[in-house]
Every structure is written in C-alpha cells, then in structure tokens.
Length: 194
Image 1: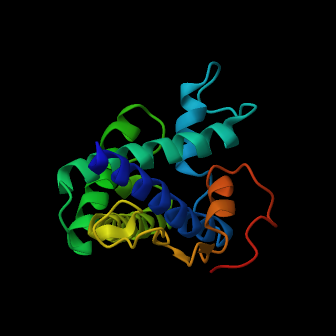
Image 2 (image 1 turned 135 degrees about the vertical axis):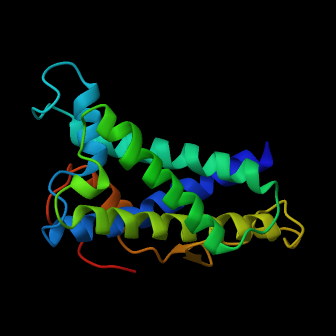
C-alpha cells in the first residue's frame, strides 16, 4: 500500500511539472488544444469535436487523475526500490506512445504522432520525458526515507516533499500551469517558473 501511495503522490507531482512544459508549448503556438481537454471533450455528451462547458476543468482533473494512476502503477512496480531516472523516462515515453500512437487516435480524438500538427509531438514527448524523470526522482526520494515514517526521518520531524525546500513550495507555477494544461485558465496564470 505504501508503494501505491508514494507512486500516486509522485504521479501528481510529476503531472504538475509536465503541465508547465505543456503550457509553455501552448504559449509558443505549438499545441492547439491541449490533449487532456480534447480527450474530455470527446468523452462528454454531444458532438465530440465541439467545445463544451467545463471541459477545461474536467481536462485538468482527468490529466491529474491519469498522472496519479500512472504514478501509482510505477510505485507498485518499483516495489520500494530506487529506479534510475532514465527508466522513469522510458516508462513515461511508453505511456505517451501507447496513448498517442494507440488508443487516442483509434478513438478519433487526436491524430497519431506522425500525423499530428507540427510541434505538438515534440512538446508532448518532452513533457513525458519531464514526467518520467520527475516521477522517478520523487518516488526515489520518498522510498529512501523522504516521508515522516521513513528510515531517514528524525524523531518529531518530517522531511520536506520533493520539489520543496523546508516545506516551502519551490515549484513556482506548476500548480497554476496545470489549470492551463486543459485550456481552462487565463493567460496570466503562469507568470513565473520556479
């Protein structure tokens, strides 16, 4: 159970970090609609290609839910052991290829990787590399005693979570960027990167 929970927490953190890359790609004009928003749009009632109320927020929720679930599976597979970040990256790229060359185009949500709009595959590939590295680093940190109950914890203190410094968030706008990942936030939501 501990591995599942650590993987879930790592997946949420990694999704926030990858969202910064996705928003940057969108701001650079490389993305068009964000993939999580397009997936939710297709799942909601009505025409699968027409914008729908709430799809931005639901897209962000779905994105974090998928990232948390992928992180949970990663945590279970890691079994409390340290896994090198390149293996985390390979795991995340496998998810990307399986999704964006598999079920996403088969359901008619987005074109497959080689047929997608120029720029989006590069941004999404980079975002998944970032997700995989962040996931591996976060889970490794938690597995080596980064939690209050881990072997590296001191009595009466809890180690700061990955991405923070003494409990102070140093992730800058990762959380705010996540809202934009699905196209649900205004352009001013991400003003600084930590």
